[in-house]
Length: 179
Image (cartoon, rainbow, N blue to C red; front, side):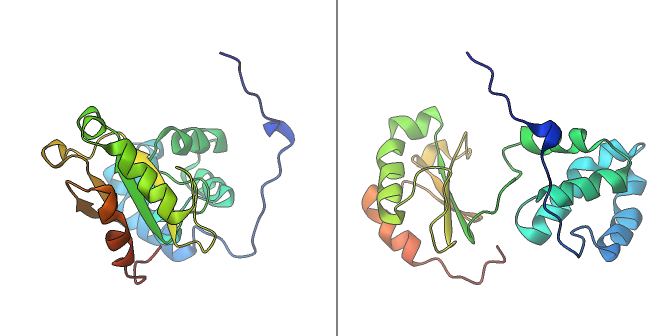
């Protein structure tokens, strides 16, 4: 396996004028989250969760701000955020469609389900529709093996999904979801 290198030593982070980790968020985190942990590093996941919940993803500037807030190296924050699938390092669609790819779902037609979603949305796994409405991902396990194949649309679990159900399920999605 070849190593893929990137020129991170001279990379530039785009900065917007207003911070992502606002003074109000910092005050809330200081009062509600930090006292629960012996060290600032222990609070890192919860702080990242708060930022992602507020914006739908983790911009590089936000990760720099989290590092400064917690007194951690920025590289530690990026390493942590990039390790977990739950963190989004690029903007995602307003709605996330996640298809389970566990062995049970695979045996019950996950690949046909995923293909139906790709065809319907016109995107590949990991991509977002041009209108920013949907992002398609695959998940390791939804814990719904008895209802395989299973998928999530935002936080709603759908079980025993057939490829022909995809159009109806996606059409039923309402755009009042926060991200």
